[in-house]
Length: 304
Image 1 (cartoon, helix red, strand yellow):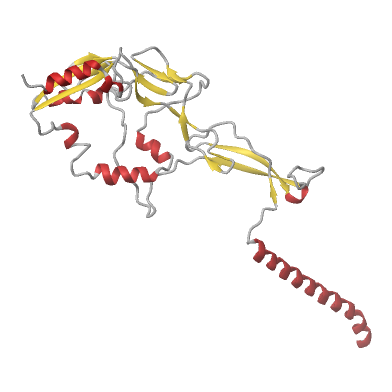
Image 2 (tube, one colour; image 1 turned 30 degrees about the vertical axis):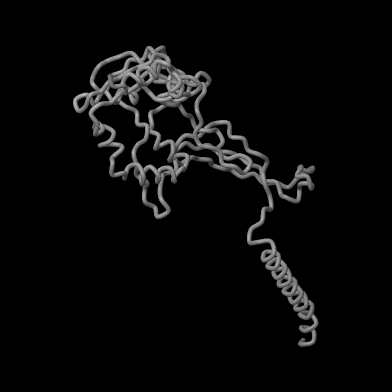
C-alpha cells in the first residue's frame, strides 16, 4: 500500500511543486514590473464624459461611465471591436474651497469691493438661463474661490496691517494741508461691479480653468439707473448718488473710477479748504491733455 500510495501522491506533489514555482515566478516578475513602471498603472479608461450643467455648492449628479480595458484599444487610442468593459457609477459633487494657509489657519483680510447700502437692488436675470439665481458676494469671496491665496495674503500683510490705515484713518481723515483742489471727469459709463457664474467645466486638457467667469448674458430684470454690459454693472449719467458731504446728485464716474470714490474730498471740507471741479465727459487718463484741466490747475497755482 505504501508503494501504491507513493505512486498516487507523486503526481500531486509534482503538480503542487510546479504551481508553487510558477506562482513565485509570476510574483517576482510582477514585483520587478512594479519597480520598473511604478506602483500604479492605468489599465483602463473611459471616453470623455461631458457634464452639461454647472454644479453649485452642495449639488451632486450621478453619472455612468464605461471603463474600457487598455489592451482593447489600438496604438492610436481608438477602440477596437468587442472590447472588454465594465460600467461604474460616479457621483460628481462640488464643495467650495476655503482660503486657508498651509498651516490650516484661515486667511482673514478686508472684504474687498463690498457692496454698500446704495448698491443696485434691481433683480438680475440671465437671458439664456431662466433658472439662474444670483446673490451678492465680495471680491474676497471671488478671490478665495479662485484659490488666489497669495493675493489674500498680500492684502492682509501690506494693506490691512498698514499703520497709516488705508481702510480707516487715511481713507476718512483730511490730508495735513490747508488747500485741496480736486479735478476729475464725470458722467461716463463706469464699472462699479460684475456679474459672475460658475464655469461648467473647471478642468480641461490638463489645465485648470478659472472657477468663475463673467456672465455676459446677465441683465437687470427691469430698467433702472444702472445697466449691465457684457457682465459689468455700470453707473451712468442718470445714476443717483449720495456724496460724502450728504448732498444728492445725478452723476457717474470718469470711465475708470466710480463717482463715489472721485468725490471723497468733499468729506474734508470741515478740516481744510476744498475746491472741486467736475469736467463733463472727460476720461480718467485723457484729463491730463484736456485744456479745461490745464486752465483750472494754472489758475489755482498762480499767485496774482
